[in-house]
Length: 417
Image 1 (cartoon, rainbow, N blue to C red):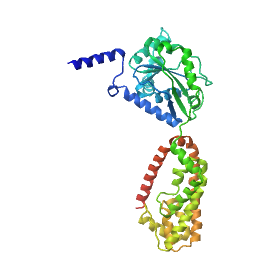
Image 2: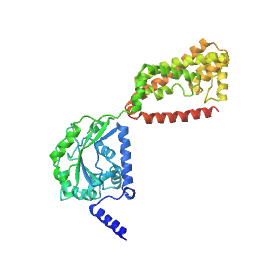
Image 3: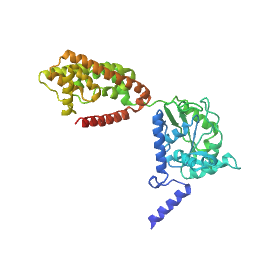
Image 4: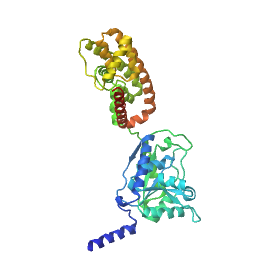
């Protein structure tokens, strides 16, 4: 009985101060989490988001004041603030909440707070809307400038946030948003770039004035521009690709693939060289030289009845290769450019059939060079387009391309079985 009374008393105290329910029982948590993940993904794809500063650990209602320079500001705050803050943004009820689809859009994607403007004035409407949210442990985001800046400077702050803090006994967290204006400027075009949310030290209601809040936000913003996030995986691969060792790796990849290595030579460009687009042509050339060398060595070994292991190949592939070389001699290797059969099988069959190695080297150079030229040109263009994303997301890129290659090679082998 005593335990039940203590639990009931604690529940009454929590209800009295408007404390939020436990995460597991809070119906707001899942929508807030989905919004957070959605906008975090959007910010990641748009240029990357870094959050600096510490969000207070205690669960309570707070007010965040931030500079305002872009429509992307709200997305960055939703992505950067913790889910448990349950951020909400003031929105005019007579516009955003008057029809069902706008209401669904603004509440679903932004967790908007309906502000019903009336005879009491703008602040009275804001207070009526924000007080229940703050009492429920939510974070109310306010842009004290009132409008987006045109030139990037932080304008004067209105007094609404400080009045709201005193009337609701809520501390204020100053925040600076960087990079959003470059990403999506007012009346401008979208341009991907790094973004950062810098959180300041919370201020008690009695310590906050519009002037001090503005100074805090400006101080945060003046620490420097948003720093782009760069993948450590990309950094390591870029160092390899730009070093002399990288060309040796490219040569050995092409050489090994022409002997036994099951991963096709072009994947060296896909996995590695695309990290530095300008190095794709030199890597492609090195791969071609290595591949032609490997074809000749493989054929020479076959003339001496030394057959290297050829994984991920089938008997049907060997039969087709033998037919191509029997009909066209060394030029039969040109079929390899489009049919998906590993070049190592053409090399072995050429050696077994006694085809002249010099002629084989010449036709292999034509076939390997033409194939690699087309692939390298396409990858160079694609790598330049994707370069801003690859610098930040090279790890996921490698996982995605490795998965794609695994699926493709499985389908090719199955088709030739």
